[in-house]
Length: 421
Image (cartoon, rainbow, N blue to C red):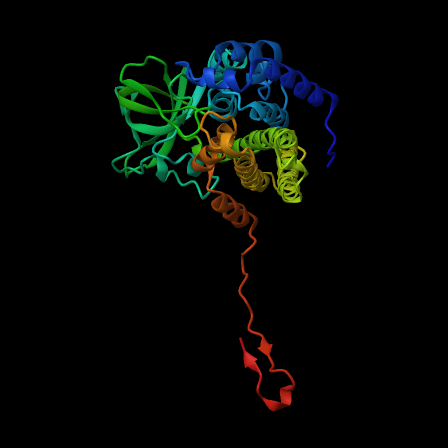
């Protein structure tokens, strides 16, 4: 693989960093998340108009830029540095690829150009707390999370040619403000049990949305309630929904990993700046060997996470371009696990090394600490991400330990005292 970034990729990063630096400091982030929308509408409009970020990975025929998920991940890394609250992840990473993969040509033509222009935001509504399961990040996706024909989840039934939805979904990222919901629902009962996706427009009768208090306020979440709400089937009745969700999950893991790397890198930078200024015993605490060792460990972990995230982005982009990215379906999950570990470590060290002010909720270090914990709740936990990647790679298939002979010291085989273990 060629690890160097192209001139176009470098320009995306540079332009985005300039914009985010000017408009998305810690105070601006805190102000934006407390608005009804949960994000800065002006910043979102600028990202769409100046950079085309919502349509970065969409085909040009639908108004997109025509790049790959690699460019989307690089852009997300810059957003992650500032923890910029935007509907990019919910819209461009989760919802838009599902519409592109499963939607009819009429649905694609009607929705994707509006998404690419930033006029329409969207969110994926998955019943319960099963987002990581639905995306195939921590286990096989069999569709049971959608209700499985039993009480709970979201149920769909066809009434006089119209699909009606009933149920609720928790932890819907940006679900309270999205103009379009892509709802996963169980249909067919026990006779023909299957999971389908439905489009529910903002303001649809029977739709109720409530913004929830989340640990990470920079990634807003909502509870979606559907009471006999009308839904439009996305694509065909025979669509491979679990397969499409799994493909989206691979890219989503890569994007979240890139966000986490950007966040970890930024909080590490701020911590290094602080320990060079704070003094104890007449000298900067950054000059103490113990502090240097702790920050060196953080640096190594962040750089390892960055390498994993970049490889996952390259592999996903190569696969999308038809070049056969090797292990793209496993690289994303492993990169996400590595990045979440790095962010949690970097944020924890930031809280401790900032001393008394670091332990206050008002300090920006806590924004990064909450992002690490919140992402692990949504997409993890880390040990299950790694176990899933190992399972998909077949690392433990046929790994049955063979008995071996251990001989006591000083004795040979002729003594017959060998012990099988």
